[in-house]
Amino acid sequence: MRSKIKRCRTCDLYTLKDNCPICGAPAVQTKPPRFSPEDRYGRFRRALRQEAP
Image (cartoon, rainbow, N blue to C red; front, side, top):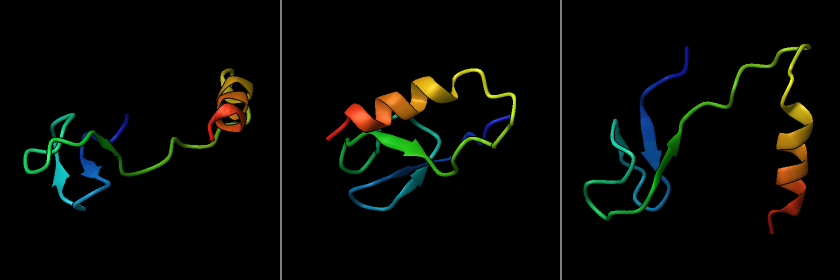
């Protein structure tokens, strides 16, 4: 189960909402997903990370 708490990258406020209530920036998950050797979507996630600037 994923953690529901999120953090705003601009003002470092923790919230449960998708956007920061103070500055309106998008909030991101606080923890990375758990590692699993049977990760079916790992290659897609790594390819997407390589495409990002």
